Length: 462
Image: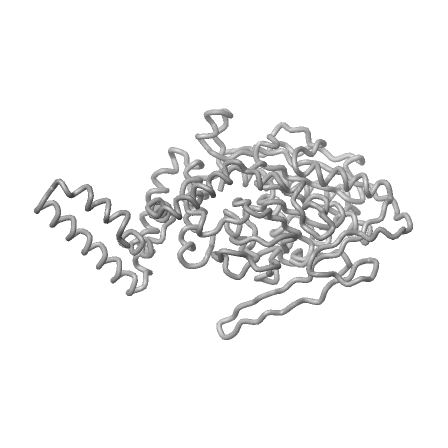
């Protein structure tokens, strides 16, 4: 392992979490993936000439609304341009770069025991041990490195979400599911083509937001030897605001994250910078990054719910998937929700079932008595049932669905404020746009600056 290995769109959308939210996140995925085959045609992959080949080829998957199927392939737009451009400049100039990566803690759980192992800290090319935080290159003078030719391209695709709702404005009703599939197909086609035409080139795969889920899917397939290129051809992967980010705190439902990111599976990507709770809104990738886990760096800004959705983000988890439903999806959606409700009730604990049944019986009796004695008091009694009893909370434990959780949260003033704050942060997307500014290490580097130094150092060490 060389010294720079990492263990391991504006996207306007918000699967597998632990109890209470396991069904919630599963529901998010089920709704996103509902429907038939993607209704898109992947754009024809252009031919390759010698100018497309370099020592390093950077393939960037932009975020939502940052690109389209007819975009100029040679122009990397938006957030990822803050990485690709500087990397080209650094490597073509022959400037040296050294960056250390954080030591990682890997936690694995078996049926009989739980073990936590801290991996040995990798060393920098200057020979110093890495610390718990990424650091920047030393300011000491160094010899000029060899010049490295870098070629950068974006992956054009219909980068949108919202389905028919977005289609009213854009004229294109493509859903997240379709857009994700199109972007992955386009990335695979271009990477496979370049890999054959440029046999000596190494690849850097980058993605931001919706593009990060596409880039992450590509890296996961390659890392598990199911992709279109050999894993040895991948120099690095960078994911900004990945909607499928693996959790980096043992309990995704925790109010606060662990001080440092924790690697819960050996094949997971590694988060760089401040740790956050939750996980990506689309749930984690079952196979992780495979053999590429040490070459994929992931960044998630604090309060960016796209990559740190937790069980507390009930309103987002419930509402956002509806934006991607087409009229054709509604029958399947209704059927899936009905089946989910049946499964959840059937799998609920006897204690929760008993408590919910008792609460419902008690409150229905109260309402029946009020209606028979003095019908005028019925509205007030109904309000007490909703706002002053535990009935809805007791039922929510049995139902275990995001839509019902969101409804119940509206009956608790403190949760109502929290959900409003979550939704406002999601809609404004301020945290989601902060990857060029929020600090990830003690030297003051932003996520994009750290990525530039990391990629540069890896290319020089290759």
